[in-house]
Image (cartoon, rainbow, N blue to C red):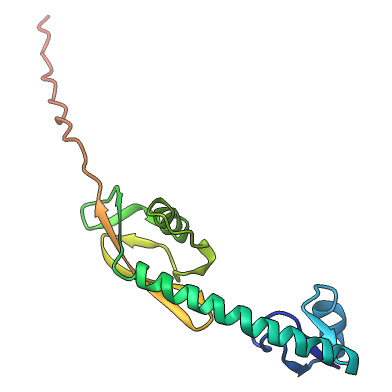
Amino acid sequence: MEVILKEDVANLGHRGDVVKVADGYGRNFLLPRKLALQATLANKAVIEQMKAAAARRSATEKAQAEELVVKLEPLVLSFARKSGENGQLFGSVTSVDIAAGLEAKGFEVDRRKIQLAEPLKSLGDFTVAIKLHREVTAHVKVQVLAEAQEETPAAEPVAEEAVAE
């Protein structure tokens, strides 16, 4: 079955591509989810118009993403977390935390665009990639610092008194 993709589909193609897929995959997955149209002559004409509109939209999105990269590159996000003696965190810094930190600085970035393979679980400086557009990626510096802990005096051992009978 030949279909025309309406959206980018991982491991298959990009919006507007005409691809050949298994009949079941097309009927049961792509078509019901409105990710694709059957490749007919009428649909091909419609898709050509959609491709032109998508190319214009993609160009403006790319320009906006490049402007945002210039603003994000010098940015340094700092997070204070409780940590053990060897630098391991008791919690972690996740993409949600980084998105919240960016929002606090005035940048609205979807947490799913933050390319963090696994949460940051140790102290130190890290560089985190943010995929703003298919062709544009920003790199933000993230510092994970030890949280200042209040010094609590150690409990003094209580001397046991011997009771003489």
